Image: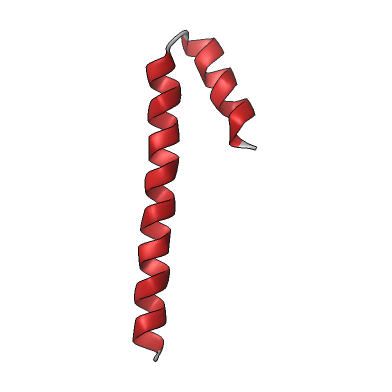
Amino acid sequence: MFGREELELRRRSGSLVASAGAHRATDALGVLFGLMARRLDASAG
């Protein structure tokens, strides 16, 4: 799903760095949401 947006970002910017940065930011969000879910689960019981 994100691949199309990533390709479009690379096409528009002409830079691989912008595409890689967006990919890393998305990965970081996944890690943060995972940590929040674990913390909520631990506090629930």
